Length: 217
Image (tube, rainbow, N blue to C red):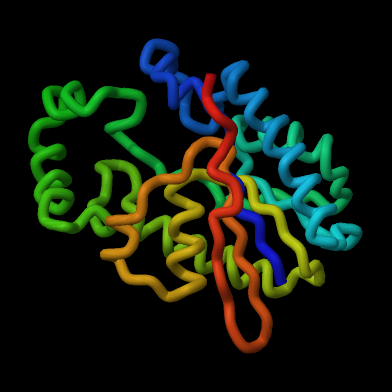
């Protein structure tokens, strides 16, 4: 089995434009740069697949049902032309609750008690466990990506492409390899439109960062 894990392209949340627009997270869309990144990633994947003789006639494209991941997947699939496309709600981004769409200092000022409780975990090597008020912590995301892994084992495809979000992808890797919360805390977030590949057979699994993402201009 091969699982290509792809983070969405640059969005208006990444550029902080959404701090003014205040769109709910599922409506956040790609910037023009993000669309270009998705196109480059699709071209990279097409070349990688051809170079490594990977058969994608029976592949599945799994997508988080958020706007930016749908846009990213659609553009990438212009290069791959995968027919079997599925969305899964367990692939959505970590929900940031009261701290959505605000700078850290604004959250601290607006919700001092909630921020103090959250920050106590975060500053004590508890990033994985720190739950955002009215939102999720990485621990919660890890629980639902365990469900996603159960789902893909029922998929008859042996090559999967998963377009999702930074925290979500990290928890997929964490669950697959049984990594610790400390691994999650120290592991940097993926760049937009970067690709990590899990390869697994009956004996062992390995994971490689095969594409660090398009070079930002």
